[in-house]
Length: 330
Image: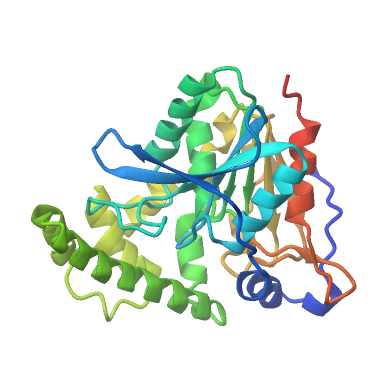
């Protein structure tokens, strides 16, 4: 179902790149008093999760984007907003994103749903009757939608929201090779290369030489300048895909939308510089549980409103709690 939106881009950020860059680079992120918890995964690695809010409230699981974490401005802002609306939240920091490298060569990718399922099952065992929802941004949104589709009617969630999702990974990888989008590509690839290098050294210091050697076998990554190359060399080799194309085809979440049974809101901006119009799903690809809210502007995880540049309105912090409250949770 396609639903109307009330989002109107701020006149002073009336451009996809300004919408994308302003909240990422300029939005303040006040320190929150978070409670960190470490969970040991079934493969004897770990994930760190960060809690915010009052006990006994409904719980919202948050999934960040590529190279993000609990410190990302959109996560920080949403945790504060959710708390003001009576929701607890917990951030799943994907492996290696919590401030400490994980202990195996594998980390995370757009189709990796084992860790979100492990976290969900852990929380459900602890709190079988707590109303729960899940929200994912960008890569985290792709993970969320894929997981929802894989699990079908096996999940006890009252709502899910996915924002700025690269629903077709191959199309998005190609888009990042074009025009100004290459700036985002260069920044992200630079961070990923440093991550692999530093994680290799970290694993060596831990005497985890078998795992470190898996990273060494990836070879020199310095000349990689596209996600097609990076995902072929790194993600495919570390996570059991035949190639970047195999990874994209198996992990793109658009093919899972029809199987989703949890009430889900998908928020996509037409001008998102990480993708093209071709990424937006057709209405006949959505299950009856999925609502698509498509905005003309908003950039990538931007969606900034307001007439006063000194008092920006971060629309997602309003829209997300609004949707959660619109769902029956008891």
